[in-house]
Image (cartoon, rainbow, N blue to C red; front, top):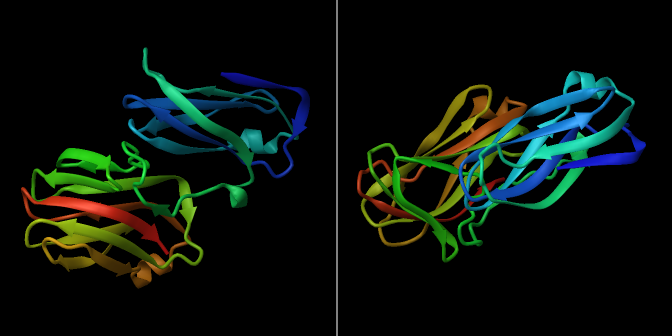
Amino acid sequence: MRLDFKTNLPRQDLEAVVVRIKVDRATFCQIFVGASGFHYLGSYRLVPGGFNLVVAPFSGEALAAEELTFVRIDPAVTQNAKFEIDWIGLFSREDIPRETEWNFNEDGNFGGWVLTNVNHAVVADGVLKGQATTTDPFMRLKFLPDLARESLSKVTVRIKVDGATSCQIFVGASGNKALGNFALTPGEFTVVVAPFTAGALAANELTFVRIDPTITQGVNFEIDWVKLE
């Protein structure tokens, strides 16, 4: 899909194309802009079942242009993939809408989180839930582009498990930073607060958040929400 500007659009402080998109299968979308030529901004992985927020920063060549002539989005590179686009925007980096809270209130919407070593993963009834297939199940959200850390200083998770275990939390902040191992009480929701380490606090940007909801194979878990605060 392509939008040609009838009158060239001054680039000014515009630095990224942002798209909120949903697909019915794992695929990638591709984004291009016309800015003193045809510029490819990248291929972005889409997680099926919920809306993905795709942020495509302008290339150096596009940033050097004074005007934009078009925006093009290839919503899926997979034949027969179905897609829904909620909105498309052009933003300066500081104005890019970024999510720092995930409530899992929309059935089927994983919010961009990718789960590994988890069976029966589903978002339903206001929670993300599943069962650990190994002692190392995890869910990971990668930020594209990196998320400015600014005042963010902790990860908070509301989680319930059905067996004695603990959860682990990590962030990407100038490398992989482990924020701790947190004991969980079976059968009830626990609010886990994971303050950033000194190393994470020294970073200017975050690249990902990772949560290991349990370290015990076979344990079922439910996550009510995740927050970066």
